[in-house]
Image (cartoon, rainbow, N blue to C red; front, top):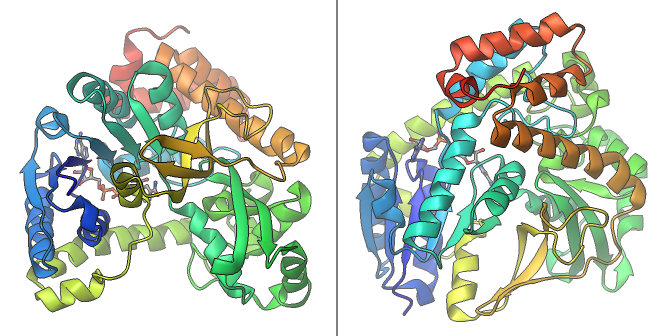
Length: 458
Ligand code: NAD
């Protein structure tokens, strides 16, 4: 019996929290634990707390729950802290995009080459990045041995920032690697018989090893591309794992892109809506087009309705949506179970590049790779074969640089760095355009203004 405290920050996100709570219920070793649900939105918190208690009771789990709006109280005494909060909510991200588009930046200034995912904001998301540091410093102070599990985006910038600026034991989590399951299913391969590895950064992840029954499986994928890819059609805007973009990126970089990496190519796939439709398929043009993103926004609104529906639902419906015998596919709770129960578990985690698993990248940059976790800690796998140099130099290097520019501007509170970042953006046509968009952000986004007003260099 583990008897530990697990804190979930930003727990008002009902579907995500219930996925985690469901996983905790499924892990016998975690019984007796206290789950601390923390959020600043009382209504959401109350709803999720009630659902979690109801679910746990319905499946007969032995768990305790608390709900709090006090960050310190939730973190204090926790052995694991999951941060999934989105400071200022989805509407802030849309406001930022609108200011950028008004000033000639299609999809907003946070949309950058190799980081086109429309809610992975790295330049204007000052409230979110400050909150990451706030949580990490509180973990360091109030629960110094706790693991901080970073789920909120941007994971790449966030984990690297926290690692460099605080002493918290930080790890990044993302479910994007499940793209490998999708590929194996499409190719008719049993995932259990695949020997695979992925490597790169968060949302910049590549299938390095892909072997089936001891033989390289890339030829099977090549065969699918030659014979079947022409019949591919997206089922929804996010369905892009085997899209023409993914295939084109594979042909250039030499390894297959996994998960949101497909959305994070160069401008070649993103110049405008028409180009997006060509690469990501009709009718949406992928998730990061106007239509695709509107589809997603609708889904986000729907989630609130789903939460209300869940709250009124019968236990049987709750169990149907979160089946007691099926793990959610999120890795947070398997990680916790592996540490506490000393159960060797293979996970894909974001960790510092200490063993040089991603070549040419410094040790203090977070990479995403397979690791084995047990009570002694995290054991990174050796990546074999390694990432091709062309991929590292042409894809990972520019993404890494942009991460450094973004967190440098943020840490130094230096608007000059942000402006120079934009000067190097192909959408920028004049210095005046840069000044205008920064002025818009300073005037309309209080968090951004608060962060940059005091020590702006230029
Ligand atoms: P959401 O807005 O639905 O939920 C976020 C919650 O955070 C809300 O309940 C909100 O009240 C709460 N919150 C805001 N400010 C807070 C604060 N200061 N303290 C505590 N709670 C606060 O957002 P979402 O769609 O659930 O996404 C949350 C985050 O998770 C985003 O950054 C998103 O990109 C990320 N995400 C990550 C993955 C992954 O695999 N790593 C997958 C999906 C989403």
